Image 1 (cartoon, rainbow, N blue to C red):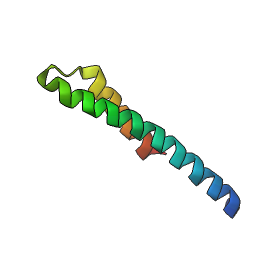
Image 2: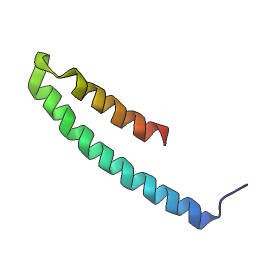
Image 3: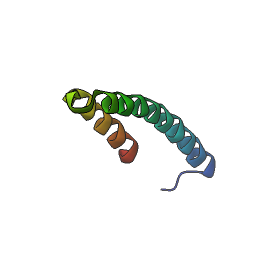
Length: 58
């Protein structure tokens, strides 16, 4: 069953809002990883991957 066009637009708007939130967090985390160099926290790296996966999986 196809969604009405206005529903598609609503879903796209929601996706873009959530993706921007994830990207904002990812950006800050990547900068932290870069600054930490070899002392990077593994959990922070995993957090970045989870954020990316959340965007991709939508």
